[in-house]
Image (cartoon, rainbow, N blue to C red; front, top):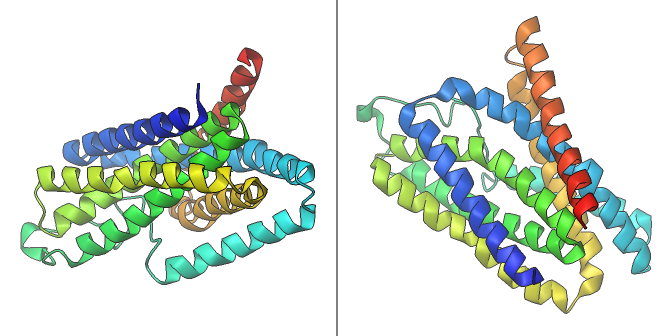
Length: 263
């Protein structure tokens, strides 16, 4: 399959699938399931970062004559960059119904669209970066692209649920909230296509882009998602979280192994 076509399909499918599942959760109010998705997403993100993206980043860096220290430095800068962006409320994720920003409120508590506008801008930027990450992964090899797309889908679902709740809280109808999130998801395709043509002429940038991709996944998992799991410290909840995180990691490993065998 042509690389550009694979990027477009993965971007569209990822955005559509995560949006559809999130809409089902948000509309049916099955928010008790969201923590389960969060635990699984943590495993998928960390598995993709450490089992797939970083090994390929180091391999492509070696082939391009780029020092390993440059890639590890890129990861460090990326983590700090995402911290600053989050502080500026451009990269703010809340993934459970216990989050203050995403907590549902009565209809009379609508904020006249302020928080909805903010989350839409942040989500559009986020989706654009996801497209760049998917493009860089597919341009390295097909297996890495598929695994990266799966990891992005896994963490997009709980985030999209939170985005739906914010838009509904801001006074948007369910239909409007869905259409707004759908338009925001198209930024993934735009980011993927633009990155394909930009990175195709700058192959030396691929290792650095993969480093930023790994930093993104590590930061989201460790800084945004894991702290929320600590709100449930009871033993059975902890065991459930560990199992689901392991399942997320295992899914990435198995997908990579399966695709490698088919290659």
